[in-house]
Length: 464
Ligand code: SF4
Image (tube, rainbow, N blue to C red; front, side):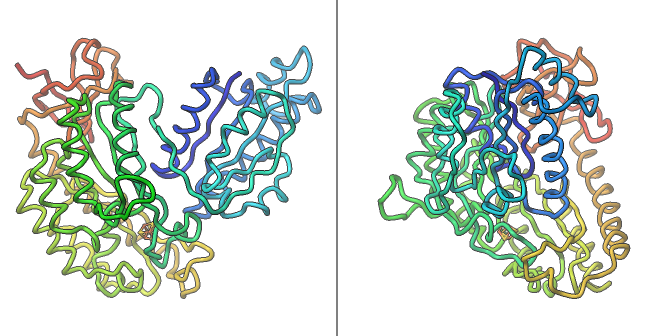
């Protein structure tokens, strides 16, 4: 039996899809390159923006057509479905369609009502029912209703098959209620995964040839977990990082790099900075979403830190970890933003000099407080975003140019898509680097000398 995945959205969705994929592989299923010939198609959805949901609704229309073809109810309406028509030439081969993720959680019963051709709607709290769903498909049983909105359970392993880098969920949900964000309404309050379970997953990942892990959660800095389920939670994020680093050392794990995301600047404490400075296994790259450079806008966003707090935090990080690379998220055009607020953001960027940034303009999300505010015209939002992008392009170029000539530790990820003679690797600071070397090095760490900058990729040569 074969499965097909379509995953939208953030790292958490990638990890949650991978966890289901691991279940399927363990039961002997194989991956299908197309939905047209798969037994089971799973769409992992994202609700963060309305545009993301609309795109998924569009795709569902296509899946509805595909299901009809697979049940021999219809001819091929599009070229894309011809493969499915060929596949069912000897009779119907029904496709089971599952929708999971944030949109499934947000709409649940409405989803089933509006899209009756979807066999299972699995909210984020109901993922642990996947084994039963897979079993039902294997036995050709009719779909049943999955109804669970209370007990969130972390999957035991969320590694993407065949990847050297993988995500390890350590938290679920968010308590912060930034006024533009729907996540706390969809994913619920924060739950921290027991540290013992995180270590168990890390051991499994080491055996699966993983070399780099990223601890993920909506706000990892507010992690507060116990060693075991049911124990008193007394492990904060700094302690968790120390425990992970010590465990990797003690077990002589092949995992040599640990990253984390997302961080919330209000919860990024001095002890976290100290652990990063002390533990070499924790990468010298911190993604620290600022969102805006004006304290007034940050307050309206309910970010609960000021521009001054953020700049002070950056100063502490750069002092204790001088080789650190900082990246961020910036949102322009928030309701009520003035020209002065834009200037403050550009000024903050000049002070921090981020290596790179995710930049976007504010888009109201129905159901959030900011969507009820008077909105700035879209052209104004776009123009302000463009100014931020232009400045970041300058900074990225400037920061990257300084790296030419340096020798950097690199995780070799695979063969370059553009040039089959070259390998592509990633540095500790999350930079891409291409260099000529034997493919036997894939999955290992090597030292590469950066010889030139080409676009946003470094070129280099293996250092002696
Ligand atoms: S911290 Fe803010 S932006 Fe991030 S998930 Fe929570 S509410 Fe959304």
